[in-house]
Image 1: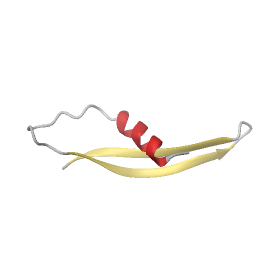
Image 2: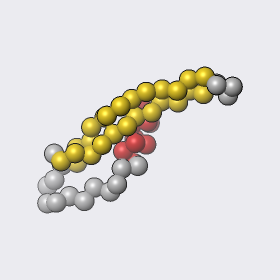
Image 3: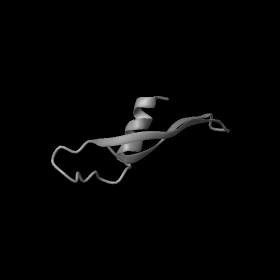
Image 4: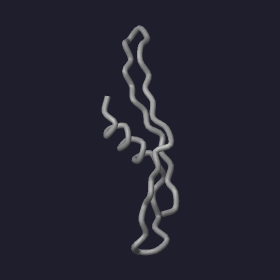
Length: 55
């Protein structure tokens, strides 16, 4: 379980960033983090939810 990996996966799943001007910044906020544990398979899964907001 790695926050870096979960965050990178969440950002990769956002729609493409289309800058409105050449020097635009891409801002991503973390909305939620959590983890799932247990089950017969011994699940250990960290998740991160993100959203893109105007910078």
